[in-house]
Image (tube, rainbow, N blue to C red; front, side, top):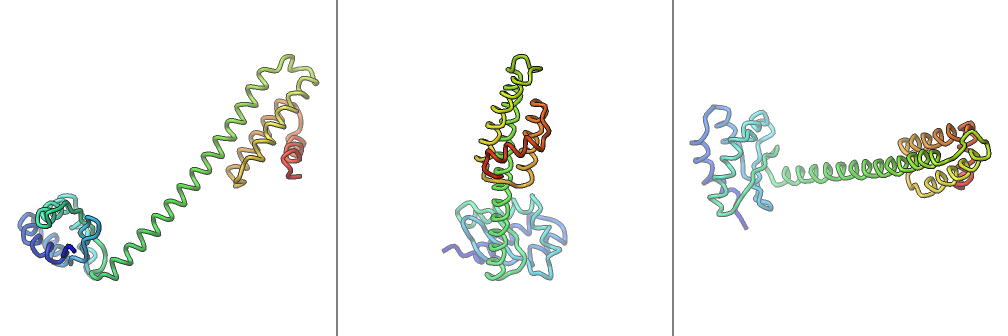
Length: 202
């Protein structure tokens, strides 16, 4: 097992000689090595000295620590600065990391689902436009009726295939209903009722 304290003990003097500024020196002297975890040297700064932590995160200082520590350890190391100087503090930081990743993953999943729903309704919207463009003699009510029948079935089938009915999806669904109503020259409420009936929601 890699001894984080031993690596830091041999790394610190070299880094101190390679930087200037009272704040950086104070930060380096306040830092404590907690662990080497999956190629990361974890350095902790006491809570009372957190204003010093920023000095250690400066790119030039962080890079000097990484290069020197890697040389002393005989393997490539990155450095991470956390609040606190104990194993418990590091475990707390890892739990926060895990929760942050969980929230990011949940947000990405939500965004992907919203994009998929939007893309699906966009496709339906475009199909309605193409099908209406293909209708001949649009002024004849019987031709608009045939288009409406086909369009209502298209939107209803898309509705049945949608797993999510959140606000964004509902707005895109409504947009398609409005487009069908406009083309068929039928009030949008009646169009919505017919599509929902076909989709099994009425």
